[in-house]
Image (cartoon, rainbow, N blue to C red; front, side, top):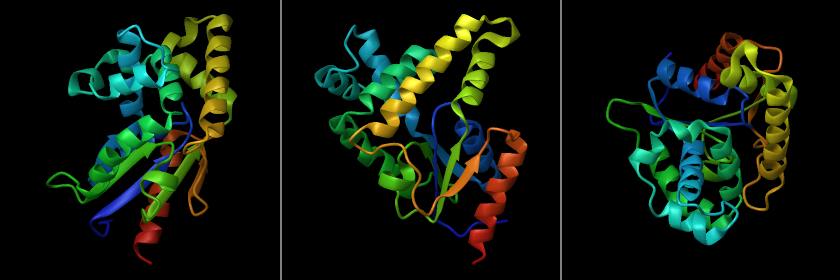
Length: 219
């Protein structure tokens, strides 16, 4: 189905919920430009770590944000657990969120040539960045399921229980920071379509999301 254009899909959810995979599949299916907004915060967090700074120090974080570039956004290190933890810390800072706000909103309303709209994957897209987006999806899963997914991604079937417990601990800590920060906490918009992936395959989740978007599109 061809969506009305231009359009915006706001996709939010916690770490390891399947959000990134769903965003890529929806972008391809509907011909949308995709922005992984978490990568922006990860890049800032990674920049702080590479500079030997403290991701809980606002000055260090602002310095890293001012040096944001394509090279660090494409670095494999951006997906590491330590980078994710640092990203969660810098993302709690109002000054950092404000610095990256304009970039995200500009992307949302200016899809590249050939794309009929945009999809933004993050934690506050539907509530803060694009509250007027016509399509809002909040994807989640219980933390144990998310920890198992991350564990298998990183260690495969040969990882140890200690590895799993560390990932579980880190995800719980990250959820706590993301959901309880004073600035743009992680939560679904009141009009968001909720998708729990705890007991669902990515294909089933994708089909449900497509049905939701297509259904709203014809109203």
